[in-house]
Length: 335
Image (cartoon, rainbow, N blue to C red; front, side):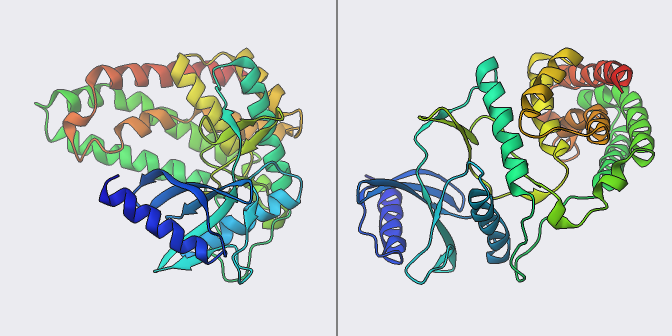
């Protein structure tokens, strides 16, 4: 065992003393930057210790959200208090949380049956999160009402990159960007118009308590199929108040780009799975369609282009630009 692993095991043991736990089989599972996971056994129960990459105020928001969701019938891991009754443990200026261990496997969202269960798990998660009131000293995360500003910001960043590319006309990647950017900007303009003339602001004009929480990173790796056949949502560090459409757009979008498929029938199938637990209003559906039409994936590909011109493959720029234009045309008919 190397020094780093030894240090992690030593740290895990010291933190667990704050819970009066002497663990069996403590092992570090994963460490990336500050975020670290340990698995352990205590009194025949398997537990998971996690070091958070958050400020205390951010952790207060997400950890208490998870406790609320569980108590409100949501399928998320239980959080255990330390000996002082606190659910967040501070040790050496770092933050730790102790969870129940989820026995099961990652859901494969390419599999129809798993996808169905995962979408039902997502809608159950959204419904169970409604009514959450965070602690007063927590840092509240909310994206409600932000979409038009985000669209403008992404569009402006792409326009700035266009200016950079114009001044380096010999670079092949920049040339490819210049070839494809104008139709993408035109899509941005149309979507900004659509969102500003949609029910979006009315949907967001609600008390936070009436809003659901979005996971923001829902998908394979963050939804487990447990041994009892249910879906459990894990890793809630990024939860935020927003419309359910935010999580839906991300999961539908990932599938679209992976399979180069923007078939309306396939989107409707995913929404049907989701609506088992949470019926979407016609207004919710409208803003979801608009959000799906925005060129999020083109932006995601090129957003760091100005830092490293050779970081993006020319063919990829061309392929995703084409994908965005075809997707926009197809979804326009749906809208």
